[in-house]
Length: 190
Image (spheres, helix red, strand yellow):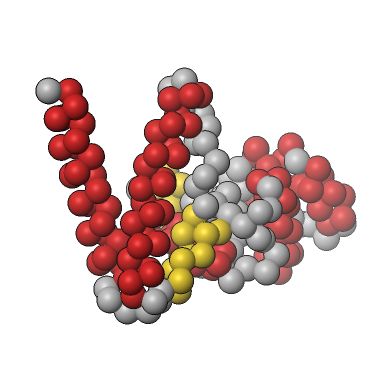
Protein backbone atom coordinates (compact mmCIF):
# COMPACT_ATOMS: atom_id res chain seq x y z
CA UNK A 1 0.00 0.00 0.00
CA UNK A 2 2.85 2.41 0.75
CA UNK A 3 4.42 1.82 -2.68
CA UNK A 4 1.05 2.17 -4.40
CA UNK A 5 0.39 5.48 -2.62
CA UNK A 6 3.90 6.69 -3.50
CA UNK A 7 3.44 5.81 -7.20
CA UNK A 8 0.02 7.49 -7.24
CA UNK A 9 1.39 10.66 -5.60
CA UNK A 10 4.40 10.70 -7.93
CA UNK A 11 2.13 10.28 -10.94
CA UNK A 12 -0.01 13.23 -9.82
CA UNK A 13 3.08 15.40 -9.24
CA UNK A 14 4.51 14.52 -12.65
CA UNK A 15 1.16 15.27 -14.31
CA UNK A 16 0.98 18.73 -12.72
CA UNK A 17 4.61 19.51 -13.58
CA UNK A 18 4.18 18.26 -17.15
CA UNK A 19 0.99 20.27 -17.68
CA UNK A 20 2.65 23.40 -16.28
CA UNK A 21 5.67 22.95 -18.57
CA UNK A 22 3.45 22.36 -21.59
CA UNK A 23 1.25 25.39 -20.86
CA UNK A 24 4.30 27.59 -20.27
CA UNK A 25 5.79 26.86 -23.67
CA UNK A 26 2.44 26.61 -25.47
CA UNK A 27 3.90 24.89 -28.52
CA UNK A 28 6.02 27.94 -29.41
CA UNK A 29 9.79 28.28 -29.57
CA UNK A 30 10.66 30.57 -26.66
CA UNK A 31 13.65 31.67 -24.64
CA UNK A 32 12.89 30.72 -21.02
CA UNK A 33 14.86 31.84 -17.98
CA UNK A 34 14.62 29.75 -14.81
CA UNK A 35 16.34 29.94 -11.45
CA UNK A 36 19.23 27.52 -11.00
CA UNK A 37 18.01 25.82 -7.83
CA UNK A 38 20.62 23.08 -7.65
CA UNK A 39 21.94 24.40 -4.35
CA UNK A 40 20.16 23.03 -1.25
CA UNK A 41 17.56 25.32 0.29
CA UNK A 42 18.91 26.63 3.59
CA UNK A 43 17.09 27.64 6.78
CA UNK A 44 14.62 24.78 6.65
CA UNK A 45 13.99 22.73 9.77
CA UNK A 46 14.47 19.39 8.03
CA UNK A 47 17.69 17.50 8.34
CA UNK A 48 20.31 18.52 5.82
CA UNK A 49 20.21 15.13 4.12
CA UNK A 50 16.42 15.11 3.80
CA UNK A 51 16.36 18.69 2.57
CA UNK A 52 19.03 17.96 -0.03
CA UNK A 53 17.22 14.84 -1.28
CA UNK A 54 13.79 16.50 -1.50
CA UNK A 55 15.21 19.63 -3.11
CA UNK A 56 17.24 17.86 -5.76
CA UNK A 57 14.45 15.37 -6.50
CA UNK A 58 11.68 17.96 -7.01
CA UNK A 59 13.88 20.49 -8.79
CA UNK A 60 15.17 17.68 -11.00
CA UNK A 61 11.64 16.66 -11.95
CA UNK A 62 10.72 20.24 -12.84
CA UNK A 63 13.93 20.85 -14.78
CA UNK A 64 13.58 17.58 -16.72
CA UNK A 65 9.96 18.29 -17.64
CA UNK A 66 10.69 21.85 -18.72
CA UNK A 67 13.68 20.70 -20.78
CA UNK A 68 11.63 17.92 -22.40
CA UNK A 69 8.93 20.35 -23.55
CA UNK A 70 11.58 22.88 -24.58
CA UNK A 71 13.22 20.25 -26.79
CA UNK A 72 9.87 19.40 -28.40
CA UNK A 73 9.05 23.04 -29.14
CA UNK A 74 12.54 24.22 -30.10
CA UNK A 75 12.70 26.44 -27.02
CA UNK A 76 15.81 27.25 -25.02
CA UNK A 77 15.90 27.07 -21.22
CA UNK A 78 18.63 29.12 -19.54
CA UNK A 79 19.20 28.90 -15.81
CA UNK A 80 20.11 32.06 -13.89
CA UNK A 81 21.60 32.81 -10.48
CA UNK A 82 18.63 32.87 -8.05
CA UNK A 83 19.99 35.06 -5.22
CA UNK A 84 17.82 38.04 -4.28
CA UNK A 85 15.34 37.62 -7.16
CA UNK A 86 12.43 37.89 -4.72
CA UNK A 87 13.96 40.84 -2.83
CA UNK A 88 14.57 43.21 -5.76
CA UNK A 89 12.05 45.81 -6.89
CA UNK A 90 11.54 44.89 -10.55
CA UNK A 91 10.62 48.49 -11.43
CA UNK A 92 14.06 49.90 -10.63
CA UNK A 93 16.35 46.88 -10.07
CA UNK A 94 17.26 47.88 -6.51
CA UNK A 95 17.09 46.26 -3.08
CA UNK A 96 14.72 49.01 -1.91
CA UNK A 97 11.57 47.34 -0.61
CA UNK A 98 10.43 44.28 1.27
CA UNK A 99 8.72 41.01 0.46
CA UNK A 100 6.06 39.93 2.93
CA UNK A 101 4.19 36.78 1.97
CA UNK A 102 2.47 37.27 -1.39
CA UNK A 103 3.28 40.99 -1.55
CA UNK A 104 6.36 42.99 -2.38
CA UNK A 105 6.16 46.56 -1.12
CA UNK A 106 8.47 49.04 -2.80
CA UNK A 107 10.15 51.84 -0.88
CA UNK A 108 7.56 54.21 -2.34
CA UNK A 109 4.65 52.19 -0.91
CA UNK A 110 3.61 50.58 -4.20
CA UNK A 111 2.52 46.97 -3.58
CA UNK A 112 3.35 44.37 -6.23
CA UNK A 113 2.37 40.71 -6.38
CA UNK A 114 5.54 39.03 -5.06
CA UNK A 115 5.74 36.11 -7.51
CA UNK A 116 5.12 38.38 -10.51
CA UNK A 117 7.80 40.77 -9.24
CA UNK A 118 10.25 37.86 -8.80
CA UNK A 119 9.43 36.52 -12.29
CA UNK A 120 10.28 39.91 -13.81
CA UNK A 121 13.56 39.88 -11.88
CA UNK A 122 14.39 36.38 -13.17
CA UNK A 123 13.72 37.59 -16.72
CA UNK A 124 15.99 40.61 -16.17
CA UNK A 125 18.66 38.37 -14.60
CA UNK A 126 18.69 36.32 -17.80
CA UNK A 127 20.12 39.28 -19.73
CA UNK A 128 22.20 40.75 -16.89
CA UNK A 129 25.86 40.97 -17.90
CA UNK A 130 27.13 41.71 -14.37
CA UNK A 131 25.58 38.63 -12.74
CA UNK A 132 26.32 35.20 -14.19
CA UNK A 133 24.75 31.90 -13.24
CA UNK A 134 27.93 31.07 -11.35
CA UNK A 135 28.24 34.32 -9.38
CA UNK A 136 28.28 33.80 -5.63
CA UNK A 137 25.52 35.17 -3.42
CA UNK A 138 28.00 37.75 -2.05
CA UNK A 139 28.93 38.88 -5.58
CA UNK A 140 25.25 39.27 -6.49
CA UNK A 141 24.63 41.26 -3.31
CA UNK A 142 27.59 43.54 -4.10
CA UNK A 143 26.29 44.25 -7.63
CA UNK A 144 22.80 44.98 -6.30
CA UNK A 145 24.11 47.24 -3.54
CA UNK A 146 26.10 49.26 -6.11
CA UNK A 147 22.98 49.62 -8.27
CA UNK A 148 20.93 50.62 -5.23
CA UNK A 149 23.56 53.21 -4.23
CA UNK A 150 23.53 54.71 -7.75
CA UNK A 151 19.73 54.89 -7.72
CA UNK A 152 19.71 56.54 -4.29
CA UNK A 153 22.40 59.01 -5.37
CA UNK A 154 20.02 60.11 -8.13
CA UNK A 155 17.47 60.83 -5.40
CA UNK A 156 20.05 62.73 -3.35
CA UNK A 157 20.18 59.98 -0.72
CA UNK A 158 22.68 57.40 0.53
CA UNK A 159 22.53 53.76 1.54
CA UNK A 160 22.57 54.88 5.19
CA UNK A 161 19.51 57.06 4.53
CA UNK A 162 17.73 54.09 2.96
CA UNK A 163 18.42 51.92 6.03
CA UNK A 164 17.23 54.71 8.37
CA UNK A 165 14.04 55.13 6.34
CA UNK A 166 13.41 51.37 6.41
CA UNK A 167 13.73 51.05 2.64
CA UNK A 168 16.82 48.81 2.72
CA UNK A 169 17.12 45.73 4.95
CA UNK A 170 19.73 46.30 7.65
CA UNK A 171 21.27 42.86 6.95
CA UNK A 172 23.09 44.49 4.02
CA UNK A 173 24.96 46.88 6.37
CA UNK A 174 27.19 44.03 7.54
CA UNK A 175 28.80 43.53 4.13
CA UNK A 176 32.15 44.90 3.02
CA UNK A 177 30.56 46.33 -0.14
CA UNK A 178 28.03 48.33 1.90
CA UNK A 179 30.83 49.79 4.05
CA UNK A 180 32.92 50.67 0.98
CA UNK A 181 29.98 52.31 -0.78
CA UNK A 182 29.07 54.22 2.36
CA UNK A 183 32.64 55.51 2.68
CA UNK A 184 32.63 56.51 -0.99
CA UNK A 185 29.32 58.32 -0.64
CA UNK A 186 30.11 60.22 2.55
CA UNK A 187 29.67 63.86 1.81
CA UNK A 188 27.03 63.24 -0.86
CA UNK A 189 24.24 62.17 1.49
CA UNK A 190 21.65 64.53 2.89
